[in-house]
Image (cartoon, rainbow, N blue to C red):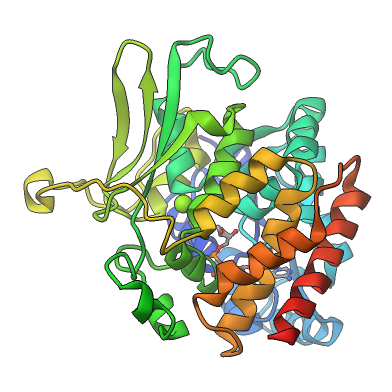
Length: 397
Ligand code: NAD
Ligand code: MG
């Protein structure tokens, strides 16, 4: 491949867990990829190191003062990276013609608008930011079709499902190729065996110590409550055009099988591998080719027995709340996601017990009711309103 043929990659949320893993894969293939833009929120020092290593054309940070400072530091090192600041610059860079591939790796609702901007520019989108599909799945998938974008899942479960689907699969006719259902695996998180009583006293540090995966703090708490699997079931419904009844969850503590697809003939196809996000990232970057990800092959004998359990929705009500919100439709998933973000922030700040996370979400959902959603303005305003209601509920406790 000649230098001019290299894919130009923009990473939204470059300094996070997914962003760092993506750069690790890209660094192994300088002949295939170059970096168009890198964005970060607060971690400007890490972004500076990444700019020095990958020479992006553009970089984006949150604050104008930090942008000016970074611009000066990069110039002093001989780099002509243009440094921009704020949400509008982030959205502009996401949709900029300077890239063909955008890795959507911002955490939470903040990822929605930049990710949609990338979709509307018709690029290849590598989606880690599941919250954007949870909030705006219908508008998002409509934009993918309308603007001819290519959407590839980075979430390990969805990437596994994608790898197990037949080439003729289309989300427009999900059952036409003999699929019966999708089975998402869940590790069960750090509290899989913790009693209901003990759950009330767990700390943020314990919740963020995931047994198999190393991830950002928000998704780590989501994994501990099983809300991550709830968000993922909604994500799977949108990505693959499936009804909620065709997406099941099974707890698999080893995180070796990343998900499965069941066919009408009784076949179950699975994707296996060591739990390392560089595998799905490399898959989506190179698709339909395959490239080295830096992940070792799986030693089946060493990994030993694989276990499977039914999820316990009594101790972990968030999964059931997600199924309910998805079935309710309208703006219920926007409310679910917003209340969850408020609850997780409060828990991480020490202001809410772990077991209050599902309680807060349930009460906020009840108070908010369900209304229909027409456009992106609706999504943004319902998100804002749901946050206010969730904060109000938390304030009264
Ligand atoms: P993280 O917290 O490690 O990183 C988040 C990134 O987003 C950082 O670069 C941060 O600077 C940026 N960011 C945060 N708030 C922002 C804001 N308001 N505006 C702009 N940028 C902002 O998170 P992560 O673990 O890398 O997860 C990122 C996304 O990927 C999440 O949606 C998560 O659910 C999803 N995901 C992560 C993993 C994983 O293994 N970490 C696996 C599957 C899916
Ligand atoms: Mg996942």
